[in-house]
Image 1 (cartoon, rainbow, N blue to C red):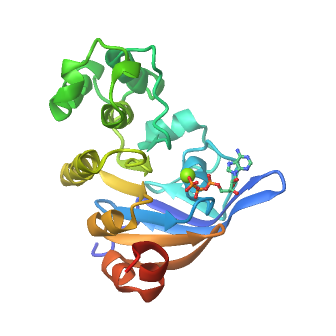
Image 2 (image 1 turned 180 degrees about the vertical axis):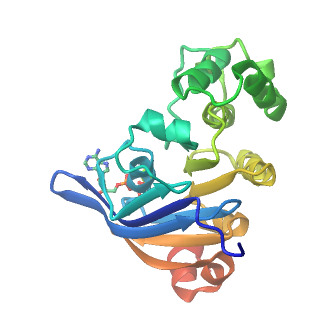
Length: 240
Ligand SMILES: Nc1ncnc2c1ncn2[C@@H]1O[C@H](COP(=O)(O)OP(=O)(O)OP(=O)(O)O)[C@@H](O)[C@H]1O
Ligand SMILES: [Mg+2]
């Protein structure tokens, strides 16, 4: 087959909070091996979209399929087990739990699909800093280390598709570079990634394709190269 079915295939996705319609019938596809970025201003509906995909926000859709399966009625836990995991906005680290406890949570809650000890050893090889800090409380980690921990916790579920919500938020430029290097590395290891980022230039630099959300609707979709060259994007996001 030359044209494989998308790993994630969404059409008509709507997210409503009571009377507030945050996402208004969007179509979104992610193919295995891609990095796809979802861009947009504050309040555009980016987090609502990611949260809805993993069942953490109220959603309706014409089609919501992952790896060929309809996931519209699955719970967040079952969606994680199918292989789609979210690294939430703001990291959601528990300050009083240790690094090791976070990794266990990522594996246990998400019912790791491989042997837990093996997956943890892989994570510690990928994130040497977490190995050094294994028994420290997560609250004592720097912002960048906490973001690494949030990613490592998500990877403990051995996902096929990783959803990243603003991984660079609040981090110093060198730390942001490290996070983006990590994202490239994860893709090279076979992970497929849907990335929400405020840093549009960095996101388009790393992504294959992108979507721009405006008030809950997709206004522009295309290859990262085309988006980077688009006058509308340059004016609105790239300051060039
Ligand atoms: N739990 C909620 N209840 C009610 N309204 C919400 C809720 N979460 C988000 N919203 C509203 O939905 C809209 C989209 O919010 P969302 O957080 O998805 O945007 P975003 O693109 O992720 O923004 P940001 O860049 O600030 O993270 C906003 O108007 C927001 O106020
Ligand atoms: Mg958000």
